[in-house]
Length: 335
Image (cartoon, rainbow, N blue to C red):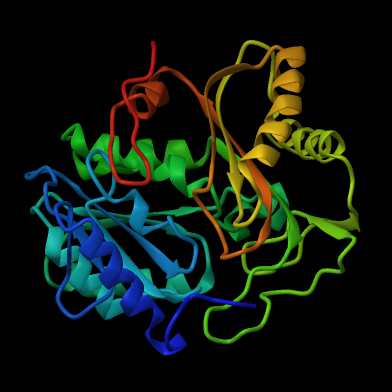
């Protein structure tokens, strides 16, 4: 598995340095950490800090910017940032109005962000957190807090950033962000593994003719392994899981993200959405907004995920607010 890197042990540091150098007008590194902050962030508001393991770019660093996160706490490849890094990142953007953390629901992230919050609380900095658990395949609905966070992170970050920039108090930002999280579901499909930079080995094993519905970004078990099927069949199966999970009805409005997990092409994403749009139209579900993008990846992992965000008027208000970063920019969405 060929990787355009130097030493594997230096890859995160060099990646962050390259990112900050390329976009130096927007970002600066926080101390000696691999964390970054947005230079032109709004002041006097609740600060939004996101983060987790690197290796999923553009998540998380690509979602720091105007109307998005104020800072990103970056960990090593597929590993949570440590509590001290989380504390230093939060203190670098704290405006005295509190800090909201948004991150995926993984054991290491949960433990380290909890410890970071405890340390910040001891220093008198008010904090709250939202753990994203949109992956419907990772646990049954009655164990929703055991589910993983995947591409649904993007919508949660978008809405949280808009709520923070609106100048709302921490308690209200938390309420809106949790509401967004609880209106999002995702299902993924893996066709081939990614690899860990520097280790030259795949993140999981998958036979050449096999696919797996619901497999996690790091190779966590899915719900079914089967042989490769035509795009329409794959899409229909994934759509049926989302509709069943969300109990979608005719007339409801959703935002849709078809996300490339790493090496799947835009051509393929368009073929998937061609069938997905037909299914949504047939069922009378209204697509308020749609994106076919590479937002939440795992190196060269093959496959894609489909994310639905169920919208109401309140969530549309924050979803439709303009935002901008080098990897995620939105104008005002139509009413």
